[in-house]
Image (tube, rainbow, N blue to C red; front, side, top):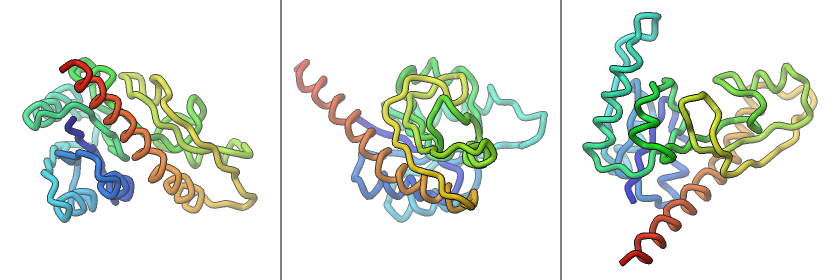
Length: 192
C-alpha cells in the first residue's frame, strides 16, 4: 500500500507519520510550506500542486484534477489529509472513494471547518479532541474511525488548545493509518 500525505503547513502531523514508518510514497502541498521540506529530508517524493488563486476565481475542479493526476501517477492507494488547506472538488472522492482519511481538531460532528478549535472555545464546551474519519465531499463528514477527547482548561488560548489537540493527532493518526495498512496487507495476503 502506498500512502500520499496532503499538507499545507508546518508538517508536524506528517512528521509523526514519517516516524511511524508508514509507507508514504508522496507528499502533496498546495503552497510552499515546511511539510515539503520535512518530506524532502525524509527522501519522500513531493509534488507542489500550487493554487493559482485564493480568491473567488479559484477553479476548484481543475485544481482537483491536477491533484488526482499526481496521486494516480504515483500509484497511490490511500490519501492522508494532514492540515491540507484547500477543499477539493467531488471528483477526488470518486477517484479515491473511501480511501481519503482526514484528521480534524474536534470531536465531530461538533465544530466542523477550519476554525474548529476557536469555535470550541467560543462555545464554552468543557471538552474537545480530535477525530480521524473517512473524508467525503461534505467537509468534515464521513464515517468516524477514531476519536479522543481532552478537557478544555479555564483561560486556555486557541494556540495552546490547538497544540494539545495536535499532540493527540500525532499519536492517534499514525495508529489509525497503521491499522488500515495492516488490514490491507492481510486482505492482499489472504487473496493469494
